[in-house]
Length: 403
Ligand code: HCR
Image 1 (tube, rainbow, N blue to C red):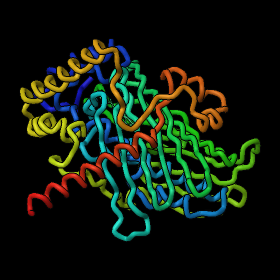
Image 2 (image 1 turned 45 degrees about the vertical axis):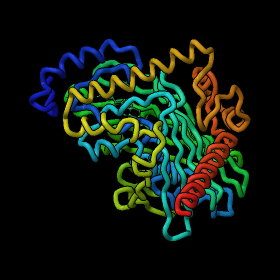
Image 3 (image 1 turned 180 degrees about the vertical axis):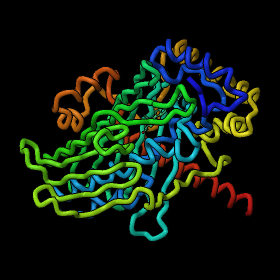
Image 4 (image 1 turned 30 degrees about the vertical axis):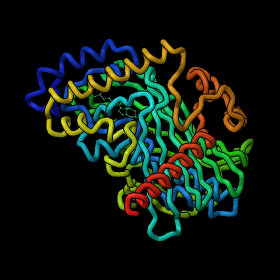
């Protein structure tokens, strides 16, 4: 078949690459892809996709009716899909292979709010496992008491020209004011267009959102939309647990827009336009102010060389990071300790998860990841405390110098 989207200079590398994926072991990170398909963004950055519309992220916190709140959580989830699954294809022309984060890599940032109504929303993303790759994240909005936490890894397989990716992990959305939790499962996906050299993501089957107030959202995805003929089609319903009545039905294309209707009356309540709803860019500190483990600081040279197409530097700089990591792991083994995750802890039992994951199919899958990664508030406040103390010491030092 003709690999139409492969640049002329890379044509000779595409065939061997296709052969290599045909026999790959399921770990996407181990794939060596030709340079033109490499992205300079690390997977740790992808956690930010959950809150690029901070106003929609915090909207449920301002709704007093539990049923409407559950609808707003579902709406928020649906509005994240475009960023999660099609933003790279839109920006870069195709899906690309992200940088494989090293253990302990951090991606930190915030969505600022000049209006004061939304408040600041903070992103903490950390690579908690390297083999297999697992990224954990927390997104916090203190003003509205909204917290999202979750983690994900992938299990992949190749057959018939497509890579099928099963996402392992889940997300939990918490509302402080109502002490309410939502358990969000992640859709499986497959990567189409590989043989042509222009991969893109399609979502498979379905995913769910279970709330502690007894609402269940079911979202069904259909790739090229076998009913409507349109790409990225989905159909979602919100029901009360144990009831067949559809409270709300949402239909549309997650990359374009959707319509929310009341279940019984079929009355149209809202239409959402994914194309015109603007995203709020994440603020990330300038590289010189970042921690050495922060993604853009650690990968700076690799990222620059990918952008300029300097393959040799990409190779040497990547190897530097990999060798450093190997040394660290060796030292840890010798000293009989494990790398200390800065913000997350692995637990065997998470009560919120256990309570909400009672529906068949969820808990069994999670078992395979060997525990569940949770955001560790204690670690988080210790880091914040240290930063404050450091800041104060620096200020004092500066004051002394002036004196
Ligand atoms: C599969 C994928 C890496 C994982 C990406 C995940 C699942 C990560 C978590 C985000 O919340 C959601 C998400 C979205 C991405 O669609 C998904 C990536 C798509 C492609 C990438 C592969 C590793 C790319 C391989 C490309 C090769 C074959 C050319």
